[in-house]
Length: 288
Image 1 (cartoon, rainbow, N blue to C red):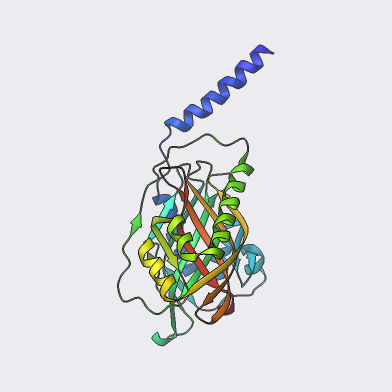
Image 2: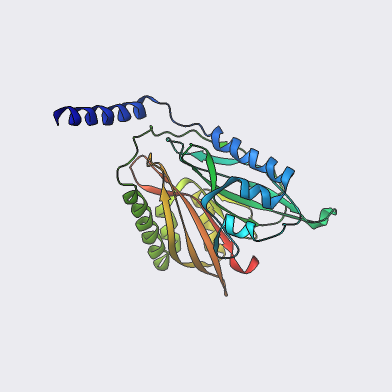
């Protein structure tokens, strides 16, 4: 029995030591996955491209959340050409969770006036073979951008960690954090964003180009007279506890107009061990 205990202790220590000595994942891993996905769609078309990279639980919003495999396997073909460029990307230290975001162009015809412009957000998750698969994909539509978007790829600052023995706890923490934020939105949207936004926070709202920074985002919310009520659906967290996501439904009053949306949030852990919103995107249900 002592030998078994010693062996188990040694294995556990070895896993921990390996996690501590192995360098963190590099953000180029998800950027390369996104670029390969874009080339696949260009070569095989939208349907086959999405099916080739989809996570088993991957979702798109059409307009409600539906599995990528269920949606694309039931359509004959999705017309038009879709292309995009990753400009904003992060990856967890363990490399099990990542995202990219950037501008896209969709064209269903030959004329330039048939082009549709916008920005996408893609969340990727590593499978059992440590290959990134598409977990969530959505986007917003807006007029053609007036200027090129600067590239923002950053390496993870956390260290690799050993796999958690209780992964459900990590998920529940993000769900509870998301629910707390949603509740605070009903009290004051401006105060909520001031408290929860990362200094590098990004905000994606249909009809507008992405906004960066708490001051710009809160100015937009104030000027547009936006109030939000939202409900959490699900969430997930990286094993290295430095990157997470959540998604759900939102009802937004903008001036005198009330509309339904899906939302996705990407969370990062700051230096004080507090979860901040690094990115938030709203997808209008009516526009799907």
